[in-house]
Length: 209
Image (cartoon, rainbow, N blue to C red; front, side):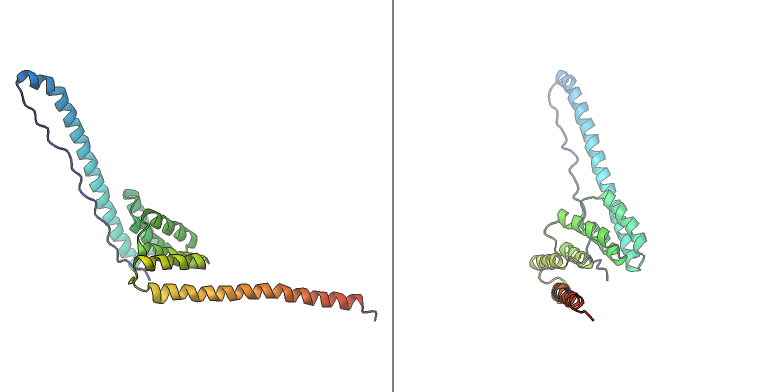
């Protein structure tokens, strides 16, 4: 089940420029004319940068909304297209990577999901939901110990996070116990096979009938 509870952060509006004041007589105005032109050029450049950032943030927000709607209706492949486009616009938004990882996990694209989830927690190292999703990806890939560590890290960051303790941490603990039991059985099995092979070998060597 996808958890689309996160809001895309809005970028802070940047200050375009401070208006320059010029005082003095006509000669000073003439001498300051090149400076004024430079200020105007810089101001235009800053304005273009701000508009470009705002456009990308707006486009990213639109793509995320579309991706969420598609994911909630089970159209995960289509949602990935919009999440990817949003990432191109705002490549440092951990929440978009986390949502993309969830969609990939639903599609059973396990290792791509793991890679994207790792990217999310690298961008934001203090985000509990990111570590929760990373842990779920790791469990799906069989990395149970590492998943449990990340679930515990998420619990430390946000102890009241939905489903984290009751479902994720307890689930990982149960899987870890099962994994250890399987490994113990695998260790015992070769020993039994060795004993059987020795018995067979002995019976062959000393069977003269």
